[in-house]
Amino acid sequence: MFEAENLSDQEKEVYQALKKVIDPELQVDIVDLGLIYGIEIINKTCKITMTLTIMGCPLSEWLNTEITKAAESAVGINDCQIKLVWYPQWNPSMMSRVARMTLGIHG
Image 1 (spheres, one colour):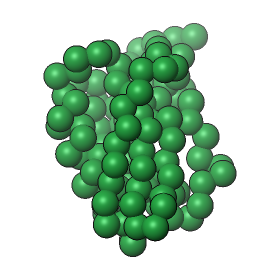
Image 2 (cartoon, rainbow, N blue to C red):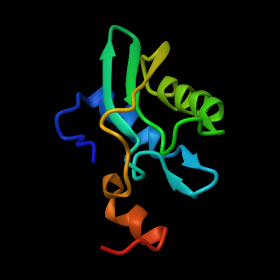
Image 3 (spheres, rainbow, N blue to C red):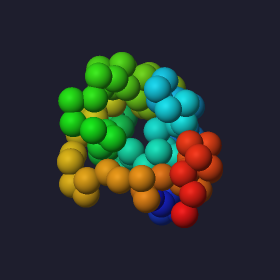
Image 4 (cartoon, rainbow, N blue to C red):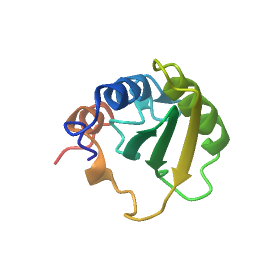
């Protein structure tokens, strides 16, 4: 799971905003799902590295829009660039304990 301890204050603000982006199929936020791999702010541009639970996810365009809105809600962010990666490949162990409990996955 992505660790937020080493983020700047502005990156932490984006991280908190991303926790409000709820996957409409799973009803869990994208941070707790383990989809966010990195947040970096250079000048006023937020660069988010992330993955999806499956290739060809039908929600990818919707998620891009919601993630961009969330990132740009942080103070001083004028642009959001999303880098979609497939490595490491997402799996349920990347979810937070809260997400696993919400989805009824034990272990």
